[in-house]
Length: 112
Length: 114
Image (cartoon, rainbow over all chains, first blue to last red; front, side, top):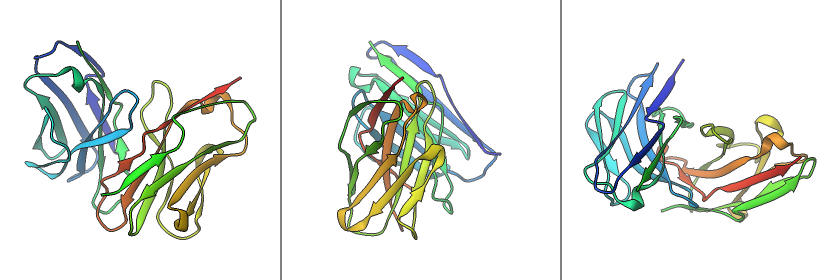
């Protein structure tokens, strides 16, 4: 069966520090991969999506970047965190032929 | 671009009460519609989805939703809630023919008092 994992689960980082959130999917190949963010009091917002290795699309301009070094690995990064980067980050995957998206456990990021 | 609106940010009700959460979307074409739930400390789970066919969709845990195309709505309902239904509920939309990039509503926090 397919599984998705992301880590770390919680993170407290100072302003200006770097960020790396990782996500891996098992049990499927060539998934579409997504990073979402849920800021406090707001809904889920799509940040990045990827349809293949090295292919990244950004939905909103921001302080973050994403990379897909392997087929089932998706990384969310920042060189210098801002206070406004605080939130709940969700990795997700689906397949091009499916219509349901599956989410990871989420990562809580607090920038202080 | 499509958008999704959920009318209530917070709902508080007692066990056995009926629940209805509103969801409206703006998109002129064919859409796929979803309701997701996030229980405290857990990750998002799919409650139900609509792609085509019967506009009244049955989901897990006694939830149902009705797609009303003329109103661009996909309201979630449950006749009698339980304390375990305390969670945050998200409505989501994806264009029917354009892949799976979901657009989410702002979420509704539901608190069921025992």
